[in-house]
Image (tube, rainbow over all chains, first blue to last red; front, side, top):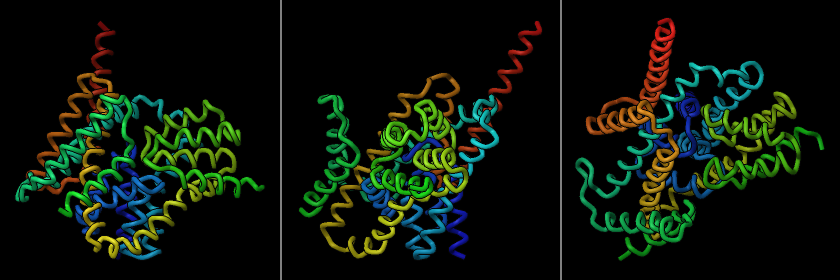
Length: 186
Length: 191
């Protein structure tokens, strides 16, 4: 039953989404791929769209996948599921356990969890780039994409060093869209 | 204005302008809820941020629930959280209706190919930023390596292990290491 699958899938995402926007991407990828809801291609597009529209990435993803798989009701169910854990955890902390986060075992668990998440994000991003360039497994090496990736990365990281001012993510996305339109049309 | 309606619309407004992830909107919430509406104090705002960082879920939702509950108990929490989610829900729902047709246009598809490059770079950059901020004690460094190696193995051998399993394992390792250290310290003190 798709509604139940959506609910459980995005409840998992909401429950394990520690560490901010980019930390959820590997998690969403797992859930969405395991259920066959989106392929790598659409997932990447949706990350870009989520970045360029308001709202937390995981909420946007839940709405999109829910709508694709189960219409308006599906979207509502998936979005509710992804928000539910955060909602109740805050309520619980406020009402009964305001010392919860001071607990040393909770602190110990978080101290293991946080670095692990960083590693997961790092590999997810790196694999995404390599795969996109066709450098992974049985992909076909895509020289043009490799060149564009180096160029865009150079501009993004270079601007921070040279101009001491970072290009913000939304600008980078728009810029890359223009580069894509020009470069892939030739 | 009744507080529930006020909460709903205030957070809907915040929800409409939270581009680019959690931290960008903390200042927006601070502005609205602390300075304008005086719903919570600056110290409380700091507390929510810390709680939000240590609990799952988007910071935006954590903040909305916190402020909502503070001002209107359970109904308030629901009103604020609903308000926060509604704008992006409507926008993404509309996009989902026409995205597939949109992608059939060649130049749009090319634009998205370009965007794909940016997304990979942004994710790696997010990880690098977090690495820089992380305390580099042996435990932390080992956990990062553990995650990186596990993730690579999972992908190379196409193992069916979710990153949630890695996260649970890392939390357990954190507790075990802490308990061992604690015991050692206790024994040390006995001597």
